Length: 299
Image (tube, rainbow, N blue to C red; front, side, top):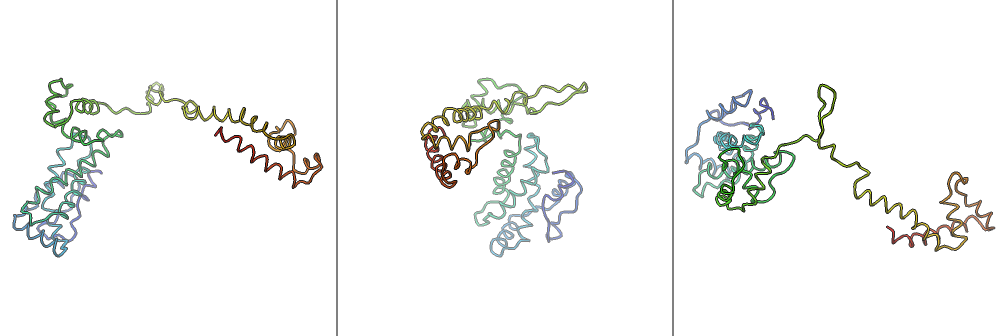
């Protein structure tokens, strides 16, 4: 999302004048505007939450969301180190905030700010994992925990020492090998698949050059070999199972090259054997079925 599109981070609809978000032209103006929105007291928060839960009052829900937009901005700022647009992080956090408002129960005696924190972070985490590099770096629960905590536990950009690895593993309750694996993933650099051409016209060497040619792909090589075997010994074995007349008909109908004059018609074979064309067709059909059974072991 561009900064100009950040005005769409939240829809104000028919919010009360005190909580209306003014039109803004960029992300900085949006952040400034949400920080000027008034915060709710505990009593106001409970009253609005009850109106929403009991009467489905969308204006009440909107006020709850608007008054906590500054929280989303604050949380989203913590994830700027992943190279994703701040506006997009805020957008995802706002979605989490709206989910929190929908599920918030004012009777539990917990403030919305505490309840919403989980939903805001969860939505931002999901967005980061889906969009941070093409290679997904966190797949298990332990890896997710490391992905979002390892950077803050590293004192500098240098490789972790064995003692630091053990300490981080203890703090995060994960295994040392998981810390090492995640550090390796996070320290890896993105590499373009295709090279670029410099001013001299020479193209740089890139990973795409390492890829094997299509005809060298293992499964295709195996398929090609099997096809050749089927064409060779398979067909010959299937033909050997036929009687002389059936074999002659199959070879004349299906195995003659253009150099030999091409395949013969049913009528030409009928004249050769002194039977009807329909009889030749019947013999051909039966022979093909027999050959199909003989070739079953080759496919």
